[in-house]
Amino acid sequence: MKAMKNLLAKLVLDEQGGEVLEYALIVGLIVVAAIAAITSVGTKVLARWTSLNASM
Image (cartoon, rainbow, N blue to C red):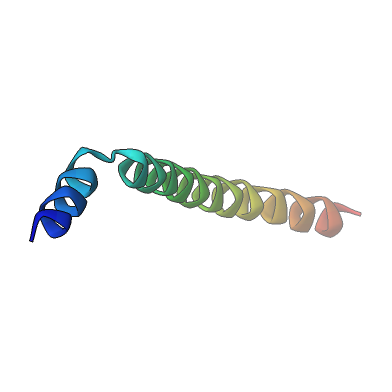
């Protein structure tokens, strides 16, 4: 019983798993922002390319 109590105390005090989760959330947000930016810029570049192609 004492071994289980010690294991539970170690798990409660361990914060390394929380840090990994935070880093994963940050990376996920960066990926979502990058996809949104690339999509927005890609649409504008395609419109500009089509306009230049039509004017030639």
